[in-house]
Image (cartoon, rainbow, N blue to C red):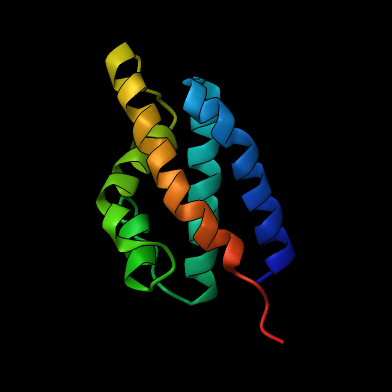
Amino acid sequence: MDFEKLQEDVVTLEKSIAGVKKGDVAARKEFAVHLKEILCALLKDRREPIRPGNIFKDAAAKSLVPGDIAARGDALLVRWSGNVTPQDAQAIKDDSARLSDVADKVLPVLKAYTKDK
C-alpha cells in the first residue's frame, strides 16, 4: 500500500471536515467519496472482498476502523458517496452531525497508519 498517498488522502479529509461541520453539501459529498476510496484501498491491500453498502462494516471487522460506528458509517457512505445527494433540509442537518462524529473517530485511526520498517 502506498502510505504516502494514504496520508495525503487523510489530509484532504481533514480539510473537508470543516465544511462538513458547517453543513456544506459539497464538502460532505467530498468527504464521503474520499473516505470510501480510502477504505476500499485498505481492503484491497488486504485482499478482502469489497461489498457495496458494507464497506465500513468490512473495514471494522478487520480492525481498520472503530466498529461502534460501522452501521452509521455505511449508511452515510451510501447516502453521500452516490450520484444523488439528499435534498431534505433536516436530513442534511442530521447527516452533518453524524458525519462529523464519524470523522472524529476515523481520522485519528487513519492518521496512525504508517509503513512498517
